[in-house]
Image 1 (cartoon, rainbow, N blue to C red):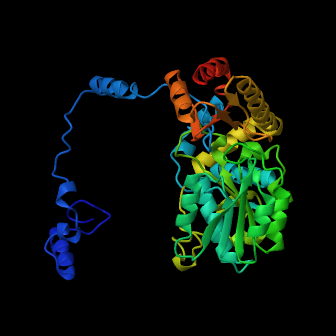
Image 2: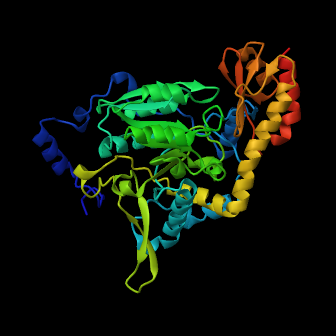
Length: 442
């Protein structure tokens, strides 16, 4: 115990003076170069208020938010989360837990995470899944750096869809800074990959080919196996982007030749948060030691009982930093727990029923929108999942603004194209939305 009362750091006045002298400065402040304009002056300039006044202030502030019914989509999907998930995940042993480094006191949590990994393995058809990714964008970046490490093809190009969400494209490019890898787009035709153009573009210098199903426009990629075949012909890795709900009814990516599957797993377990999620990441068992983040493994304890523990933590910053394959260090365990709870609550039949509704709801709403004068829907003559594009005679920005004034939010994705997403959470508002769209389209 030091004289200043801290059991953690040795910083008495004499010790502090000795350390400062050793580095050649007079004060701790001299160790930092903080511009005068942003330095803390000792006052936050916040007047103290009682609890009632603070609550009233917060209520007034929050009431200024727009109260819109969302039909947005494009990577953020609002599905109903059963109250069971909120109640169970809020138990103290889950909610206040950090990374489960001590398996002897975290068997329940570790088992839940193992079940989550097992669900992802079953949905993707691949041998390994983790439970520790930020979101779909960083999962894509990790897939790319995994491809760089394993180098099944000695290439320097990564091919991604023309319609890739801009945020994912930027994150991917950031991940590859310093690797001398080019990210290039291949064309799309009527919402899916243009196989002819992709075949002309791919070569032996291609390291990774990435495809999505459903795409950011909600279109189901109909020729996933053909894309995987082109990648295999050139010894390039094949990565597929999807989500757990869609994967419950679509072809398993592994059956289409996928080496890695990424996406946002929080279509289950979380409401749309526009910034918070958890990345789905699965890969072939050959890449077991290249998986970023953390894995939960199952084994036996000294009495022969089934036991769970964190294993193959490829970050390894707390073990052997020079051998780390990734610096991703999120503790997304609680979110993965919620996803596993939601999936278990739905069960196989409930999950596929929800997925099938994502297809039929989009199809039915597109038919209603197509009946509106001045609008054609869907733009792409394909099967859709949750969302679709509609072409408007009126400028899309004006249609979006009129819908916003009527209480509905959609994306304008082109000069004359809007995107509409429907799930069970906004399904009850469709009549009002269609009428508002009819007015906006005039």
